Amino acid sequence: MSFLALGLMAAVLAVLLAGLVNMMRNGPGNASQRLMRARVLLQGLAIIVIVGAILIARSKGGS
Figure 1 (cartoon, rainbow, N blue to C red):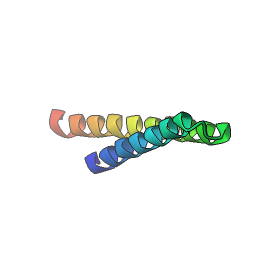
Figure 2 (spheres, one colour):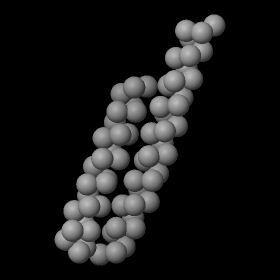
Figure 3 (cartoon, rainbow, N blue to C red):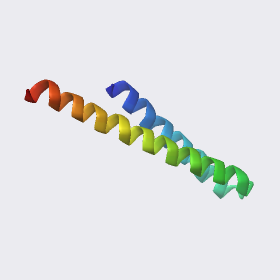
């Protein structure tokens, strides 16, 4: 599960950097919007996976 979280965080970083490059090059606004939506979606997935991993780890060790 931690590899999935790391992969999602790397994907968030990649999309963020792509959006910044697009913005600095005065790229199309539609591309910026798509990248922003993708980043928000990936961040949400990463948070869900991280919280899930924490909950699973607590249930295995705390019972």
